[in-house]
Length: 413
Image (cartoon, rainbow, N blue to C red; front, side, top):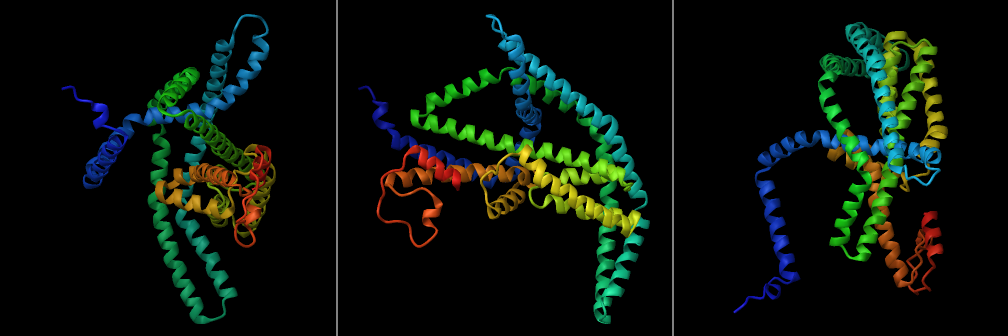
């Protein structure tokens, strides 16, 4: 008698088996979390060049497309197809520009940064005494209760000792880390080679992914997946790459302004301000506070006031001119959801989570909004949020809105 496996293993049975298998895998990972964590660390180290190469390829893809469009206008005028040649030339141009930029940073910025950090570390004790003098004078002049003065003085002394000891232990690590950048050259070049392969075979890889998705998903889910992927790519590319470019411009602008104003440690302050500017909302404050303390301890109150004024001007230029032009329109999140994404992303993944938390939550938020609006339109309810601001939602179904109206209301949100 021939066994009909199709009748035995129907869709429900296969689904139950899949759930049981996933449950066993999760239980094993939780029960042997140390072993699984070690294996994941080993796997991450092995895949590290591929991950970095993928990030490099993703960042370089946009400028490569820019050069590709202009090269096609110049080289693809005849009947002969030179699209592949244009794309390879675009990759070569972008890689040359990137290597030139990295070489300039390694040759100019890194030595000066190491010198500034070492100089600051050597003068840390004297700077701490100067800063302590300013704070005690402020407490004595503006606080009139003797008990409060004593309490604030003791608290400040404890804070100063803790910060000084922490910086004394951290600064040598920073210097050694900066000097140890050469150890990552091998990984960088491996990642660079991988990124070249990814960029060269971009169309083939994307076609293979679409082919697999088309085989596994229904037509409707396949179209939805492509739509969500395009939306995610647009949000991430505009936000993450825009933030990195904006941070670079702010760092360069800060260095130029600090140098013209005669500020001490211009390169160190520019790096601090530029790096922290990547963090949404809190980045300018996080970078300005330690930079202001460095200026206060090394150059006095007059330079510190000038530094605060210059930082405020730079941040106004950034918020009103650079960010709208580089990042573009808003990613569609209110201030509350931006804070939510920052805290959750930072709590789960640290600094990388803070950087990618906002665009990740923007994608999730957009997907949820599309699903909700689709179900509302199917029920005949209006999809615009303004229709639900007062009272309860409309209970009387309305005629389904046209695609243009729905899109218009969604864009208004």
